[in-house]
Length: 109
Length: 254
Image (tube, each protein chain N blue to C red):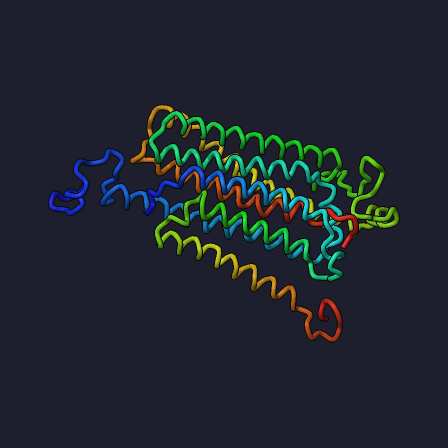
């Protein structure tokens, strides 16, 4: 369980994936996807953050051995990110929807 | 100490010198250590999470100025530093692997490689900070001033018109917003760099101990836990890079 030895091949594959993803995110940022798909949805930010989350998950699962850890450790890791999720989601939903239904325009008052 | 009639005693003949008396066996001791490290990292997640939340709210409210100010940072160095840090994470993972296999010299080699790559990262960061200093983009300087600057070909970034650039450099409100961006830039990358400096402070004595043969395949918990810390700091940068450097690098301003 906790003494699991990860093969070097896995580390090298993860390293290759992280490098490719870094180069991808760098070039993806130079393409105006919002214009290309004629939308106001922040596609560029979405792509950049999706790549970042993918990279973070690779590091956590393989470099930090969480994939091979005990259930207790997995629960603590998930709890850590879950509480971060609560903080981000609830606060951002407030900032996003604060003015919904306001008759006086942005700012409310 | 394990009681003589303990089942553990029967399972593990002999007493490991690194086993502390309040643990049953090395496995339990390592598990407890690793769990404690993760609880510490959960706290670190909340600490950096607060900074990211602050950044996201300001970015949402002042997007155009954040995009312009972000473009004044050289994305090339940020991308190189991302690769350097990923490289240092791989060498760290290899250090843990070497420790698990009980290979002393490879362990020392990979720890030193991690230290060097960490040093390269901080060196590049220092160069970036110096660039910001030269450009008067450091909050707190009396000379703080932000204006969208033309690149080598004389073109403004992100299709900013000269009129927009003129307006930004003369508006107190825009200057104030740019100040918020650069404050967040220095606080977030600075806290990250501080974590790297702490890491370097830990890894140097660890290299000495590893060289002296303090760690082997039965006891390498400090190496493993330091690895967790180092990878966590890498993850923070994985999010800092797109959020701070890649706001808007496209030919038009959104």
